[in-house]
Every structure is written in structure tokens, then in C-alpha cells.
Length: 303
Image (cartoon, rainbow, N blue to C red; front, side):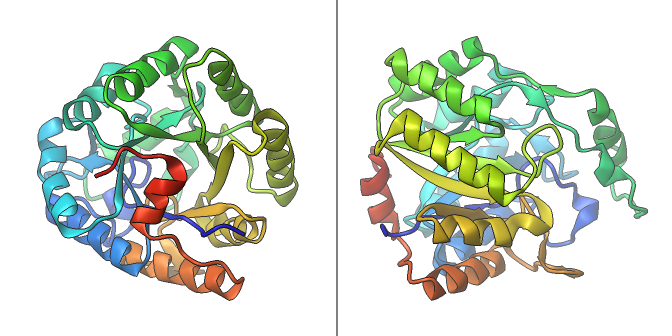
């Protein structure tokens, strides 16, 4: 098997500050946790920004600029900027910071979908900020919009014009078909780095049979021209990542996807989750890829 890429998703836009005191919100917290995750073995850092005043997901380039230089100066890990941002942001808001900073890698959701987070608002808790519960409750009527026109725009702006490569986030099997469509259009070049996303209500459930079906489908559509990785939200994070590693794929962990290290135990940092999955994949005989090896495997333009 090839060396394994560990991606760490540092903060995301799904969890809210009231859910864990360890969720990084300020620029110092995001940068510190990102560098710590890289030191633990993450070759790719999947990044979102937040407003440090209230922890709300942010598209403001100023918020990105408060932590990106620290991360770039503190680690050689690949910086992967989201183009998904938050499902309530417009496409131009989501692209404002990536267009300004022109990273070597971006995420790209391969289709529109229901993005339902409202079950997370049911658990009783003391809310720190007044935006949190209304934001979650309103997702029973939320569609994450990423049409073929939107996808083409991101590929043009970030790929063609700025040289970024992509983490193609596929929340359903139809998203693989959409990726193949853009391959056939000549808008995407191999190698393709495909992230199978499980556990978001509106997308795929974290079921082993579904993962094996996705792998067979990707094999048929893309042959040897792709690498796949797996992320699963919540308690399915480690079991599904372990299965991916055993199948020859790559893995993603991080507080964006799961706030816990074990049942009832909050992860105190992203690095804790990286160390956990690193121990598992190395126990399976996989060797963790360094950032320079990640760049070579995925054909990145460089730091």
C-alpha cells in the first residue's frame, strides 16, 4: 500500500462554541491547534475561519489573515482552504479568502444537498452566544448550494487561475458522477483526491457497505487516476477511517468532524485525534506521508 495521508480538519463551520471548550475559535487557537496537528502527523490541514468575537463561521479575509501566516511559518503541512465555508454563505463570500491567498489546495463540494444540523440543537446546554441555537434550528430548511455552474466557477477561479488542486468532497454517490462529468469536460486533471464524506444528515450514512460501493464506483470511473480518503462525522469517525486505511485509502480526522476522542470524552485538541488515528494506521502497517510526500502524491504546486 502507498503511504497514508492524514488530513486534519481544525474547526469547520458545523460545531458551535458551546459544544466544546476545546473547539478553536480565535486566530491563536486555530493556528496553535493546526501546528500541533501537523506535528502529530497531519500532512494536510483543512481550514475554516471564525469570528474570534463570537465563534461564528466567517468568510472575512481579515479573519483568515490573522492565522494563515502563523500556520505557514510554523509548519510545512499542506494548507487546504475551504471553498465550502458555511452552507449559509454565498459562493462569492466563500471564495473571497481563497482568491486572495491562493493556497496550493482547496476543498470543493461536488453538489448541492440538504445540510441538516438541527438535531444538534436538541441536547440541553448553556449556549454561549445567541446565534448558535437559531443557526442550528434553521437548518431544517437549509440547502447547501453548489450547482454545476458554481463548481465550474470554483475550478476556474482556484484551479485554472491560481493553480490550486482540490479535495473533492463527495457526500453521495451522485457526486462521483458529477466529478466524472468535469473530468470529461477537461476541467479537472489527474490525480484526483476524493474525500468520501459520511454522517451529515442529507448525505450518506456511515455504513461499511456504502464505502465499499463508493470505492468500486470510483475504481470504475477513475481507474488508477485517483486517491480516496474518508471522513465520518461524530462517533463513526475512527471506525470508518480505520476501514479506509485497511482498504488502502487515506483518512481525515479533526474537531470539524467530531468533538470526541472516545465515548463521553471530549478531545482536548486536534492533535489528540491525529495521534489516535496515526497509531491505528501504523498498527495496520501503513506509513504516514510527510508534507513533501503529500505534495508529490497529489501533484501540488508547492507551499
